[in-house]
Amino acid sequence: MPKLPKLPAPPLPSALQAPPPRPGEGNGNLGPIEEAKQAGITVVDWVDERTSLSGAGRWLMFRKVPKGTNWFYTLGSATLFAFLSQAVTGVFLAMYYRPDASGGAYESIRYVTNDVFLGQFVRGMHKWGSSVMVVLVFLHMGRTFFFGAYKYPRELNWVIGVVLLILTMVMGFTGYLLPFDQRAYWATIVGVNINGTGPLIGPYLSDFLRGGSEFGATTLSRFYAIHMLVIPGLLAALIGAHLYLVAKLGTTAPPWTKAEKRSELREAEV
Ligand code: HEM
Image (cartoon, rainbow, N blue to C red):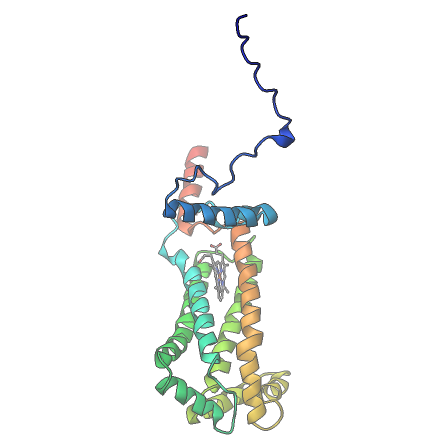
């Protein structure tokens, strides 16, 4: 009797079918670099599946940029970079700094400068970085002002910017006292007294800054807390809000491109 052909196996119900290979489960012949890439993709996919963060990332990073954008538009990002550099170098300085008015503060700064590996370099970066950040904030503010970026609908971002400017200055003012040497001490007394001459709130402000009527240990720990915790926290939160608005509203086109467009429109009307 002729042999009958074998019937094909019945299809498996989908629950029993082998799942498609997951990223990273290739045919097993991937090289180490490919394996490492796949591992990275798997981790990112795992996080993204649970958070949908890639959508937010795309929204933030892939934006339309107006025609004519130039180097002046990088001043905001440069300020952001200066802030991040201050944050990182500040963390390393905080590992050694002691807010002790009876000589400990000065001694800890002396120790960082003279004895810690790369201490003078990191302290220098923080010290010069503070001036760089102040200059960049002003240049960035000038750019947004002269390009008319403070107008509707970006007024709120301008207001947040003004607060960022004030906070940046407060960082400089409070940081200056921390070495607690003669220059820091007397310069800050002058600064606090100038604050005291302000209308209405001036005397309260200088009392608050001193931590009473006397300039001393409380003043130093107060300046340290403001410099280390209060203002960096506020700066980080407000920079987040500032960048959210930049991403949401887009950047302003340079004024001359608008002028070109206006004249093009006028020509079209004629
Ligand atoms: C810590 C300080 C600051 C940081 C890190 C920062 C960061 C940025 C960044 C990254 C942008 C987008 C890119 C650009 O236009 O340059 C931007 C835009 C903007 N910033 Fe700032 N900024 C700061 C302070 C200020 C200040 C002091 C003002 C004004 C008082 C300001 C007003 C604006 C405005 C109005 C825009 C929108 C620009 C446009 O639409 O073209 N920012 N900022």
